[in-house]
Image (cartoon, rainbow, N blue to C red):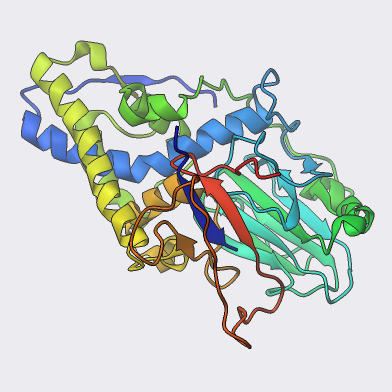
Length: 390
């Protein structure tokens, strides 16, 4: 069997029952809104799948630990790591499942040698990269930084270099620490040991505020189920409880409410007419047709990672770009931090195939101009996971 490859350079609350009634909306209208809501919601739902594995489901091999504690990887990613797409093998990762509901967190990073690249990618539950701590943005001199949720209104505390405000109540700070070579791993571990996370009250030596209510997490869908299951919209509704509506999306949420999508709602497909059920299925399929067109633009070199990862302001409401980013490599860096030129086809426009041999040639003096490192990594397709390549 041929293997396709791709080369990449580089709270719980009471739910209100809402159903779609034929008197409220036509099947054609429902189909159009479902397509729009699915494109909007895919990164949110897929992010929830990963975060549930990392911080909630202790039975999964991907489980990292409790919320609001840093988890450090003492090894590079391998093909056995399957929760997250397109990991790199040039840095060691550290993660935090950040619950910002009761109070902010203070992230402290140590001083390190100027030659070593590191970054803390601040990702919200929309999967926007809303800011960065690290070599490029804050330097290698170390310091403490405040990560605050949408409801916190305080001023910058003493001892904190900068406040980063997150639009969502849950967040996913992702650390990358450069590994120079295999013999350097103990040095990276020392850097990781200097990464600290504390609630703001502990950082200030003050009493902690009341704890936020425990979250009654619901079961995520598998990647395959996410493509077609109407339960997708119930998971979207669940996660939206932690994502206060921003002014620019108010009209969008009013439109989504017509099909039962919104924070605190229940999407009950069992109560839909056969015509409406078909409309839901068609709308979800339409979203994947739109994604296929986007992927073709990637394959033809019309788009790259720098177009689809970034802040809310950078993406300017292009939710198809955000979906494409999640499908092709969720949690990718913004272009200011890193670029990921992808090769899906060879020089003759034929899809890359694992049974063939390929050469990537750089002319003399034409190696990539970078300030940290560059690499060539092989992933399988369509999973976008590392290939076993001994």
